[in-house]
Amino acid sequence: MKKFTKVLTAAAIISALCVVPAFAQEVTDPKSVVTEAQLNQTLAAHQAVVQGQVDYICNSMADKDAAARHAAVVADQVKKYNRSEAANYIDYLKKVNVNLKETERIKKEVVDNYTNLSKVNPSYAAMIPQAQNDYNKAVADRLQNEANIAKAAADFAIMY
Image 1 (cartoon, rainbow, N blue to C red):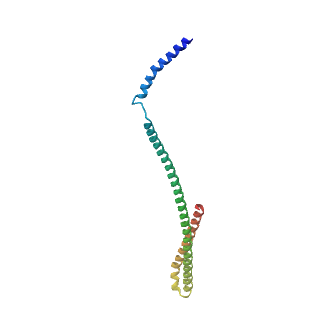
Image 2: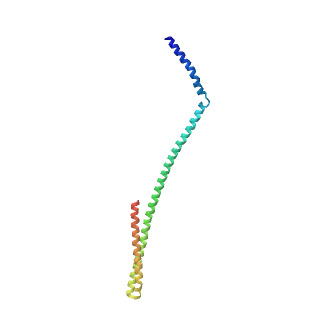
């Protein structure tokens, strides 16, 4: 058995001596050898690429968040502006309506004056039809403006 162990040991030593130079040949081949400096350089380059990708993603996400926040602020400002303008328009129409009511009142007085004067002097009777047309137009203008006010108020209620 001792002899067999010696043979096995000798065979192992001989095979190790034959194989090690083959491994040494592969490792020492200048084309296949990677030095520690080259490995570190490659790792640094890879880390730079990955960091660039991470930065791009983070910046892109930050840009999207900033854009979304900006869009929300602008939309809010536009909504406030539109609301203010709609309220101002309704206020304007109400003030116009006050003027139209006053115009209507004056036109009615003119019709009444011509009617009363025509009782005293028949020459004023010829002016009554034109005065009545002016009065009817003033009433139609006021009614149209009131319809515009109602529509604007309804639109305002729906939008805001």
